[in-house]
Length: 394
Image 1 (cartoon, rainbow, N blue to C red):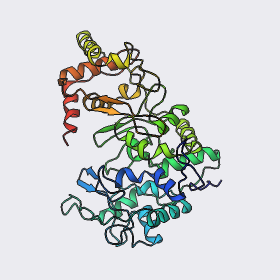
Image 2: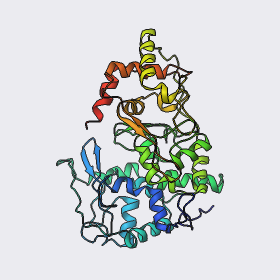
Image 3: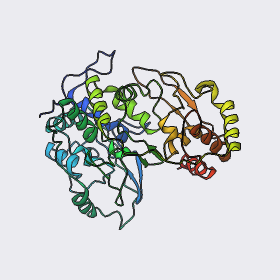
């Protein structure tokens, strides 16, 4: 079963008449901007910081500048870097660059991406920043061992038992979209515990860089399409780093590709069981949280946590609110959030309340949200709030 090339003639998001080139579409699907462009930096000139257990590393310049970028790369060298994590001069790339996913790209898509970066992107003479990992941990040769243990550098192989649409979704999720980089838990060597649907841990939810990325397994198809296209669905909205993913990447995918992704994710069996015998918050805690909710939240989210369809996310039944790991919901309460900036919808901004809520106040509020309107999740402690608050300063 063959996959239709990603670089077919496609339009930008609905309502736009500006056509994208084959390679630009691949770059959008791969979300190159998110990692390789600083908020106030030159496009694709690198510099974004990525914390790791060993120290901070920085995304590189992938513009066609011959000195600081990839302008001197042949296609074979580019392909090797994308599939095997080996740079032009032979040094190995840290797997924070998701070559473990990009290895699944088709030859056609890889060539289209190369042509786009070399001929459509403006060269930027911006020097790369060295990592903050000190010697001897900075030595790269152990990455060869890491690759031998955890990396598969073969293109995606279609499953003949599944439809073309399912395979298309699997190709995008496992490969270009590198969804597992955030949504799959990591092992002892910071490897993703699964790279495809054969492993139950794949896309089952994970904490990374101070956020909790929820499970994507078994999601409703219409919700997936809406969230990826506009950053919101009837009752939910994305927050945190995923907002940037929608802004820079998924809003530009074709409706057919969004539907394929949704079909594939919906087909994955839900592996995270419901937590049994969840402890209830004390009545005094719930009452205190209710009062805080009435002061700061009820105007927008409603007296029953119902929100406003496709504008304000509901809190009742909200998987981010009820997640076993409440980190993302806590950070939204403390720091605020905004829905993505897309061509389909204007952004909605929620202010943060960390400036006025004490750790105890925020814990009581979160415990109320997680234990009301049918939500059944464990209460939150002041220590958890304190830890979440500290992440903003990093």
